[in-house]
Length: 198
Image 1 (tube, rainbow, N blue to C red):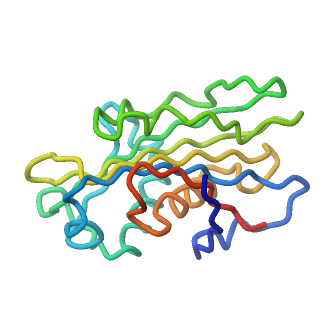
Image 2 (cartoon, helix red, strand yellow):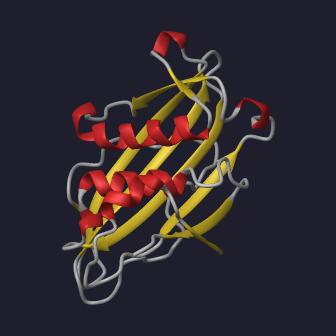
Image 3 (cartoon, rainbow, N blue to C red):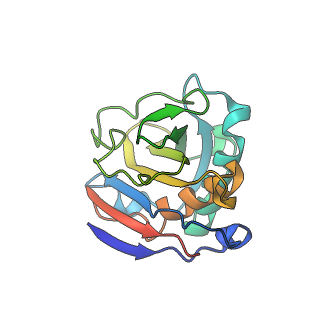
């Protein structure tokens, strides 16, 4: 497991002091062997996962789009995009007993067979303790628009105390997106813990 520090401008609004520190963002990424030359360039369209509530996903898609532009992509309409980014999100609550229950309906389905396991969690409970925490799990799949081939797939999981500014949907969206795309595209199959500055 590798630890990194997240230093994204997107987190500036969410760095207000809080009594309890949030956990790191757990990030796992998979990169297709031949995808290197295609990533972080060209045009991309960010869309909701199939069956997802687009309104519910709005802050997450906005955060993902901002990070992709930062990486070198240019946002485009679906018809003119060379790549498509599909966004999946689930918000959940970790109770005092460590149990996980949805805060809202999971918005999106499975990421598919490539990188199998990216959406399964890797066994680290970033909550714990005796307090209630709100978690955000985001999965993003980048496909070639013409062939639907998966080029890149990533998962980020983050929990923050319920009373933390980072538990807010917009702040957590920016936090997980910035972590997910830090040092993009990352190493295939690697899981890292990206520290969130207090």
